[in-house]
Image (cartoon, rainbow, N blue to C red; front, side, top):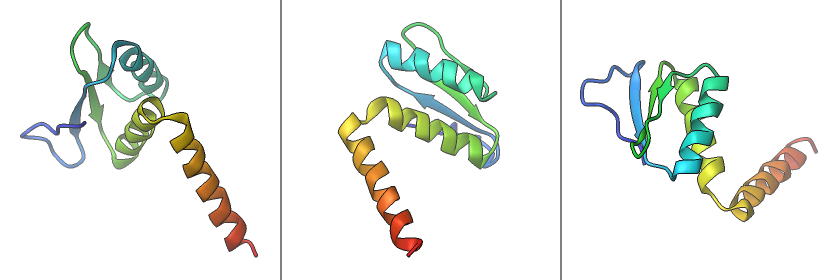
Amino acid sequence: MTQPSADADPCDLVLELSLTGSDRWEMYHRLQDLDIPCSCQAHRPLQVHCRSTLDAIQCWSIARQLTQPRLVLAQVLDACLDLQTQSSK
């Protein structure tokens, strides 16, 4: 899914994400809202410039939301809520 550029610094990572057209544009707009630099051209992979670990995690999270089935996302959320409930006892 992601390909770091060959000369990338660990704090300055360029990712190329191959997504469907609608997912690519939705991710592009979400990243723009988060002020994460990215570029998106028609029929080309989305390029994301992660300046920090937080940028990379947010990029991963958005990609996951767009590519995973809703059932999988719901199961992950349920598991997180179960862990939170167990830790508060």
